[in-house]
Amino acid sequence: MEKPVDLQHLCEEVCRISREVGKFILLEQKRLSDQSIESKGLNDFVTYVDKAAETLLVSELQALLPGSGFLTEEKTVAQQEAELVWIIDPIDGTTNFIHGLPLFSISIALAFRGKTILGVVHEVSRDECFSAIEGGRAMLNGKVIQVSERSKLSDSLLVTGFPYKDEGRLEAWMQLFITLLRKSHGVRRLGSAAIDLVYVACGRFEAFYEYGLSPWDVAAGAFIVEQAGGLVTDYQGGPNFVYGKELLAGNGRMNEELRGVILEHFAR
Image (cartoon, rainbow, N blue to C red):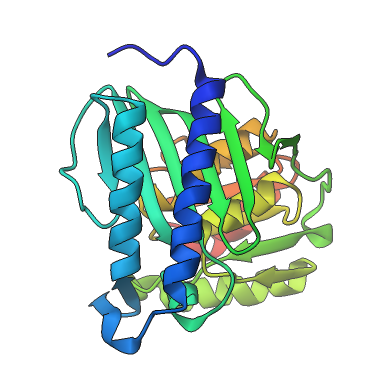
């Protein structure tokens, strides 16, 4: 299967689809009850809305690119291998969603032979659609965005998450959190890795770091950071951040300084 030629048109369609599904998510949030919330593990939740939204996204994206494969969080479709693969999180920030916090997003990436070529993150409550295509600029609702220009960790506002599946390294992670609180303007925790990443892309944060993440959490947002002029690596400074479960995304000006602090607390 060949790479799509008109990525711009494809991206516009993905933004349209994500907005339509976002409206569905907001409507269903009003009907959500405790009885409709399932637990996949400790602090790992799913609702019928996640599954229904994923089904809608898959249906629309299949029609948009027949023959493409899928890697999705809720696995409502067979996880197909193909040259072109959609990587989807229907609601990134489900815990926020079920508690009524307006910080959750739809994350959609398209990979060609394992390399991301398109990314869309739609922050549902604010109707902010972040997008990027290979060879293009990162956009927010059609306007160009870029990472911040701050070059020192001491001048930076950071964002992270607290992993809930790998508690063996949680104590070191909390010590790192305390250290960075003292070395920066502050550290935030929003509850959606996809939003964290696109907020780095548009300069609201200088950097995002976390471990224990899945491809559908980061594929789209990390690509958007890169297209906005930022730098994304694993903790060793390498490129294995989509599948490697460790990610540092920043404006590129203070990544190495931050990476050094992370490794002091969090070496393998």
